[in-house]
Length: 170
Image (tube, rainbow, N blue to C red):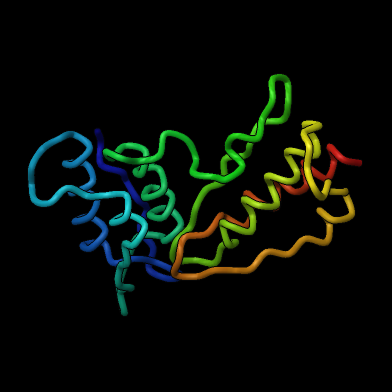
């Protein structure tokens, strides 16, 4: 496995390069089954926190967050598919469950709220029984709680799915 080549920025949201590099080295060692200390777990990735350089360069937060989300699949015990309550809501020939990117240290949507709503959307469009079918108008009005410093779904990914789902129901 190759070490990621994060870009470097001097301004904006960025993480300390030394702290990120240390965790990345441990992730790669764990994925390759090389012992260089304690193995990294999925929980370690989800709870990772890095300092922000006061002055000087750092790695862009969005690049590091995306790498950490992808790295969950490489670790023992990592998810095989996106961990979503809506994952089993497809039927043969039906609309598939979306795969949302997760974010940790920037604003995202609360995963439980999104999962519940997506499950209702997929049940509605796939013709499955649902206690409250979703309408296009409800999709336009839906608002999810924002989260920071805890895992949430990438806002843009969810909004793109909602636009697509609204088109399905229009």
